[in-house]
Image 1: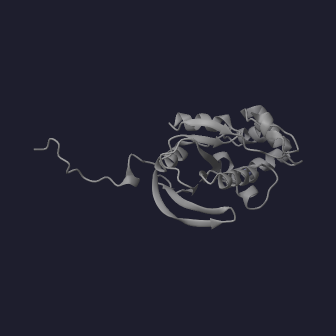
Image 2: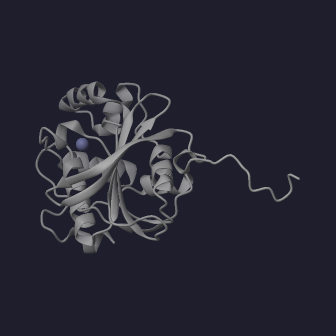
Image 3: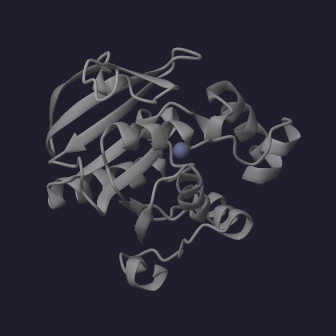
Length: 225
Ligand SMILES: [Zn+2]
C-alpha cells in the first residue's frame, strides 16, 4: 500500500535542507543602477540579516557573476578612505548591472567579522604603527573571522549552479568551494589606492595573498590576471 505512494508531506521549497537561514522577506528595489530583486535572509542562530541583490534570472544558471561582500559601515556610509570596500561594492554592482545578470550578497560581518567597535579599536592601534593584521592580533582576533557558510546557503537557495566570483581574495574562493559552491572563474575586483589605504592594500597583498596590483590608473585588470 505504501509502495509507490505519492502521498507525501509537501516540503516548502524555501525550507529545504537549509539550516542556518530563513528566507525572510523579498521585494523589488529600484536603484540608480536598475532594479534588483532584494531578498533578506535571517540567520536562525543570532537573528542577523543578510541581503541578496539579484538581477536577472540566476536559478539553474552556470557562471553567474557573484560578489560576496562583507559590510563596511565606515567606507560605504561615511566615505572612509582607509579601505577599498566601497569601491569594490560599487564596481561589483556596476558590473552586474552592465551584465544584466548577477548577484551581490551583502553579509553583515563588519570588520572582517570582529564588529564595528573592534574595527575602530584596530584603527587606533594602526595609528600607532601596527598593520591591519597585527592590530587584529593585538586585540586577540585571528586575521579574518569571516565565514562563507551563510553565503553558500544563500547561493544554493537562489538555485545558482556555479559562480564567476568578483574578488581579489583567494581565501574567498577557497571558502566558497569548501562550502560546496563551484567557482568557475574569478573576475578581478579593481581597486584604486590613495594615501590612506595604500598601506592597507599592500598589507592585504603581502600578508593574506590578495591579488592586488597597486597602480594609480585603471590598467590593473589585465595585470591581475
Ligand atoms: Zn572597509
